[in-house]
Image 1 (cartoon, rainbow, N blue to C red):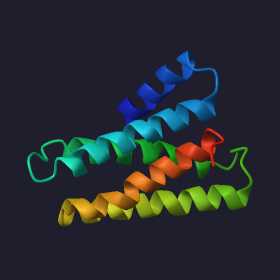
Image 2 (image 1 turned 90 degrees about the vertical axis):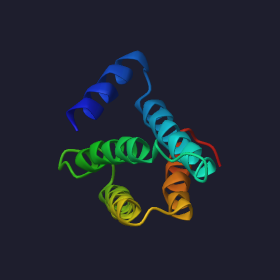
Image 3 (image 1 turned 90 degrees about the horizontal axis):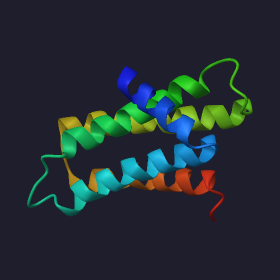
Image 4 (image 1 turned 120 degrees about the horizontal axis):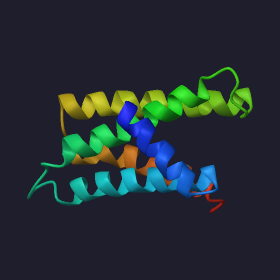
Length: 121
């Protein structure tokens, strides 16, 4: 987890807007998962790394939103935490029983949150 937090911190220094940083990281995770899904029949060697990257990213989000001094309203923090728990459970399920269709919710959640952070409909 330290490497994900470190990478997050390094990129944060390069990008002035934290929301944009979070969106870019979510889109990167979604793209990695989508690549695995598209190449499922030929090569899924990247599955473990893509899931790990996504899990580390969501671990950082979960740690952040569950901090008592986080600036978001409690209801929003709770929603993000619930999504994070779903992502973690879905990831565990993917490790137990890998199925390409099970990647769709992870990809969609990341893309939807990123769109919201970027102010897109």
